[in-house]
Image: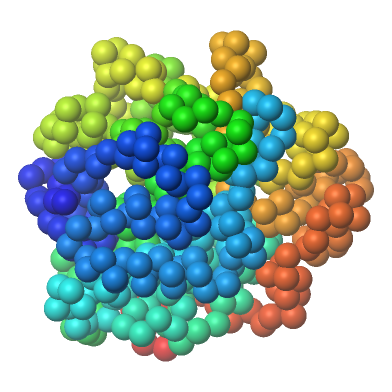
Length: 500
């Protein structure tokens, strides 16, 4: 299997794509083809463990990896006891037509663990396979969850370091503490005086900087990414779409070949793009429903075919989706352009120079045949958290509640009653103040910190407080660095971190 850049003709192997993270021309790597999974394969997955399902999907993309290396990587990621639920990605039934795919049972309580427990395994093996002896210096921009998941995945992994940039005052209290209390001899955390888009733009600029790459090389380091711009981050996410379908089959909720919907809360578009890739592989998906918060740039794009960042940026109760520049959308644009890298390059230049681009009605209509989109503001999201808990006694975090509200609106608008899976991306305990406020009112949580609010959630729902949250109260803050949002300041902050 070869991999091409979305902006040109660069062609690499799977291990080279994962090691590099991003193409030299600034594009993102995409597979040359989508390997097919048959209905017979889907039925066989019913009796498989999550690890076995992962091997069936991943091995088709990782053709230059030895088979045993793939198995060992999967076992290290999912068979090491880091996931509190042995099913890894359990499916919970709300009613006959609605199920929740819980992706937050990993070490950092967010769906990013599904990929970032595996990526370090794949990346270190990629380095060996390609004769790379320099330290792999991972640079990450995070809107909240990727940062801690990357830090946890790469913490103390030999031959690597992990540096995370997060928006100052742009993540939840628990998210920030998870990052800033991280130990390990190879981890660095830096707050950026800006929003996630500023952090992401800066990290991309560092990757594009020849001077910065030369500085890293002089230090014996080579840059790579753990953001979803790295195909090695995106690839493991395809697995849980197949796993959810197999679990629905096992439960008798659907028959093999029956098409279903997925509704996905997303800001950077990677999570839902993995579902699109699963659909291209043959998974019977009717609609992929893209759920946004008040930063509804993706909702507008699917409605109009115009992507524009000329809009207000809002801080919301679902901060992991507070994003205006969705990097992974570029991979979908590549497919909509019939894999014309030059056209994608034009769109990306227009976005960079003018802040917008348009794909035209024909491509918009093609996307509309696969995707639906909607948004939910903080008020509606809080109501959804309360209503779902009242109706089903099920506790949702704000990101999952955004998806649930968008699904409710979609069904009212379309009458589509197909079985639908809500992709749940984070534990409600990562956002305890907002979830508790949704259930009991803002006055009930006034002046309370995240830990006191977690106690409220525990009392109301009976759902145990995860130990990952409980222990944060006792951990010392180890990372206090702050920098400006321009690329020079971010580069200097990385150099300073390495010099410590």
